[in-house]
Image (tube, rainbow, N blue to C red; front, side, top):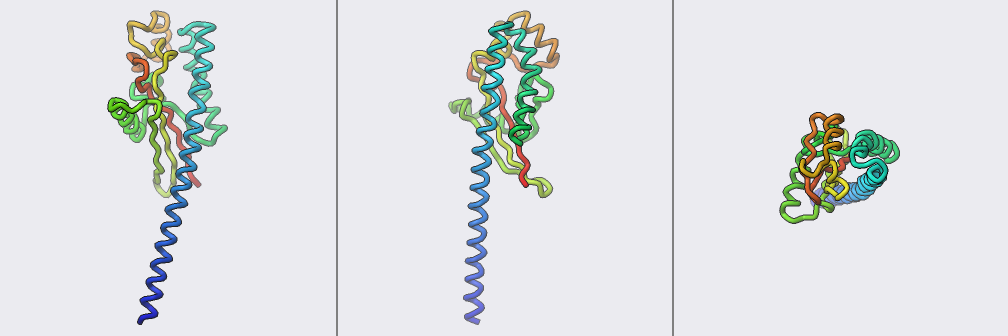
Length: 197
């Protein structure tokens, strides 16, 4: 009987040890995915801002609206293909009809707004999670996109957006909700996801 109790205790310790090891491995995997997600999410916005700034310098703000309409999705698609992550931008006040957040993204964006209102810097706001659905695991990550000076020509107040820019926006995005922002506010977020093997 003593032998059975001792074996049971050793077995229990072994199982607990394996569980702890599995938990540590999962945490390391999640940390690696988070690091990778941060790099991917941080790569696209500066490239888009560079393209938009060049277009504004060359053809004005109204011309940049058209470039953003065409180039931003192309850049996200190219980055997705290169990185293996599904990449897109979402917003609670979307301009593009494809930028409507799903339930998890909406919750994260609302949390970002609350945290920014409480004093956190919008540039540092992020959220990640590993979700499992039907045996499929997926790592999801979001990073807030604060309004920068270059954004205000298209996303600022109705009083500061020029008439030619407003016409261009209305032509490309008849259901636009993405105006009325001030410098530093959260315009939306980069949202990326990767299915795990």
